[in-house]
Image 1: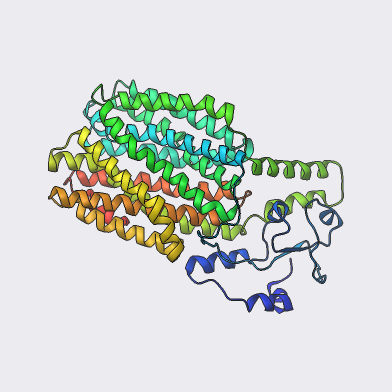
Image 2: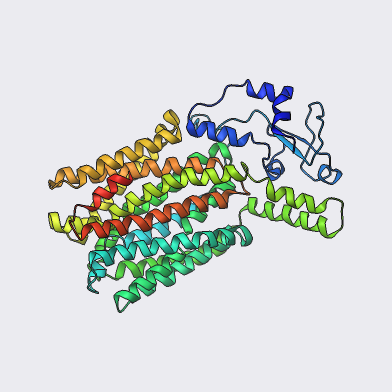
Length: 492
């Protein structure tokens, strides 16, 4: 590659540096990493007509399909391929102007993905309010209840990297089916557990396959164009929040039949989704295109074409916003996801204990409060979050969401029920706004080649927050039932 000094001294680089830069921390970060010297060659394969000019000295690289010469004067190149990206700005969130629309087949597939995410989230939220009461049947302490939630998150964190590799190698559809089947088996194990340790083991096994929502987000990122992606990711989050709207109340009603009935229903729903995904959901077309390009590179290498091995090496090395850009994206959005999930899971795991000890509420009433909170979350994702992201951007929307979580946790711990309920609703709204901002911001810094890596890395940080949050909340609850919300405030 050309040295950084040579690129800065070129007239074209001077013209690029004179352009106005985007305002904001994440805007500057995105712009800088999209203008690095080594952007991904595969991004040009996807659409070489979008503001890209390519100059190759190697004849084999110049002969590759979908790579066209631009209408600018040739540059003097001494090394291997130099890829310059021009007129590239930070991610735009102009929700009022959407230049593209999905066709009918894409809309059907996206709707099916929403349905899968909704049903999977519905099953897990059905058992959420009854899990602490179900664990009490096995004489579990508050710390043991925290281990149930943190053990689930530990398994999810460890398994996400494995599932990400499977998704890149075998496809999004295959991993989605695998996760649904594993969730069904784990839920049946929890429902028929005979002791606390059997319950903990089955819950950890379920956590290994709790990657359906992550795969759904990667799939949406593959099939939806960039300008439409923030809208559809918000809709995906809304489908999960809609499940939180109905799940706890359904679980609270089913708990009258037995505390293990909601968990068994979770297994039944996951098992029913397996044949639906198998029969109707096609593989991601972007993943199929990526596999075709990889096979072409292998075929060139095996056929002995000149520089065939270099093609594969360049496609592998020039990924997304660059190696460091990918790592910074994971670090920034991963840290935000970690803190947000630690606060959210700490609240969710110990709220039933707090409400039971402070206000005398049972599982039915706790489930209805979760349903009311989910209603505010759905409303925030549909009407509030897109507007806030459009006005102030993803970074400041995430900050505003964290501030709402902090204020809600302070009010929630008050002994007056009306004040505590208002704080609970505010906390739900803050979590919804923060999740939407982080998800849209992370997806904007990905493409088909590194999307699974970045989103899996961010999701791993979020799962690690789900490990720390319930553990600290359970430990704090052994001292006082309202002390877990101090930890929530700290993470917010």
